Length: 234
Length: 234
Image (tube, rainbow over all chains, first blue to last red; front, top):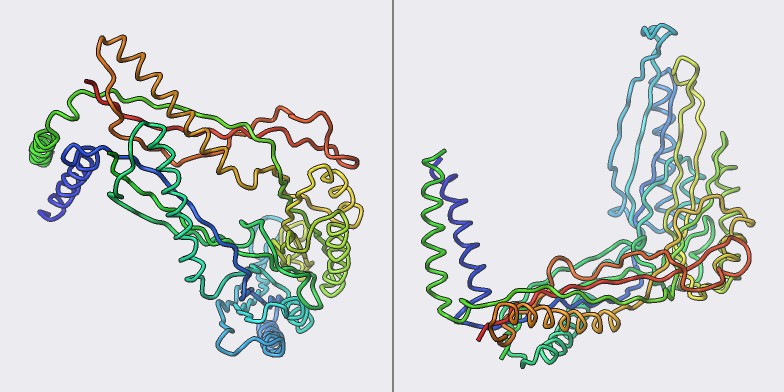
């Protein structure tokens, strides 16, 4: 109990201190700006959910049919260049569905819905069209969440972070001059990284379509970094 | 309740008094204002999401039909002058949908829903109407968004910031005069809230729409920035 009460008090106290420190310091004048940097990276991996959904009133048959097709879909994914460790079952379920008569009463008949879904990651993205078509041919009847991404965005993040700092500095110098002051040292810096999916990024520079089968094209992923910087004013 | 609130109030009072003691006289006489600057920009890109959706009881046929039309739509988009790099797959999905009878019971039959959608960046705005028309003619049957945008508003926004600072200064000078004091130097400058957000302005800036086909018009986009400025009083 005591800890619960003390924590908010300490928090508000530190907020107040921080708040007044930012404004005053020892009479420090300040300028706060945000800067942003973005780097477009060609995606090098693509993930997709591949599922087999079967339905019927004989549970054993429905499951057996699902198992057979799910096995074929896994084989098709491997054949399209997906490594074993990049194939992961994300759900398997069997769902009994009661049937109802015209009065809304259960009529004693039940059907079964069986779903076996995999998440697969393909690291040679020019094989995506063939992977999708191969999986469907092999019995997948649920394909969801095609998502392109960058396996290791750290280098792009470094570059975007540098751009964001340069952007912030330029803006700060401009505003300081306009305010009739001289820009001093940074007092505080904070940062955020955004890795939007390709649907959020409309800048693309990848080459034409991706292999045979389903027509798809990867575009690029935009790595964005934002910085907030408080500079001293002199 | 009282027991909990009292210590908090005490702590806050102590912190507040500590704070004002630390600030000394520099902050005791200030004027705080918020200036606004705007930039009206003509869009230079338009972002389009469109796609092909097919359905049917035979998954192979539904996918094949979708592939054929999606391939033709992508070719039509390229023919309208869109670079390969400005088009990326937004979605590819196959969904299995159970059929239901009058009583709401699954009939055991399923149909398949296939969607292949692309994001397109069009840089020649005059071709928008033709692009949409030609995509629809080639088999697109879903247009999910058409959004005009400015690819890089940074420079215009920085001019708007200088404008905001000037407006803030003019407000502060008026307030100082009205209060019979002399305006001092800038103590803090910062952006309130989350920076620039475009405000849509649907008044068309151009007489003509986007060429033939579907009638469209880009209008102008109004961006607004605010700066909060604290001035000292001499």
